[in-house]
Amino acid sequence: MPAYLYTVWFRDNAVDQCEQDHEWPACIEIVAPHAELAAAWGTALASDYARRHVGLTRLGQSIEALAAGPSGKLPLVQYGAPATDAEIGW
Image (tube, rainbow, N blue to C red; front, top):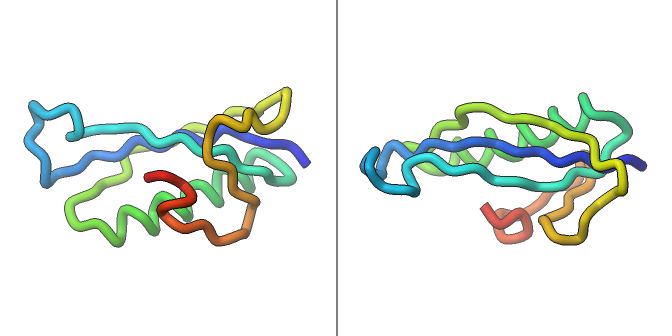
């Protein structure tokens, strides 16, 4: 099954704008039948994370096909499979 790089950008409104942790990206690799499902699953995971952290806003996301498959360097999740915050590394 194909793998995709999902990148989401967060803003932490509890952190001062001048701090580097005010806005930050998170990247995970998602194994899914196609890009639309990978994007939807990544967004579901990221939205759940943002919902559970007061002041955190999801700014946007992107999806990119990984032609060579999973890199082994980033957290890897399967489409539809739950993943803990620790597994994702938020």
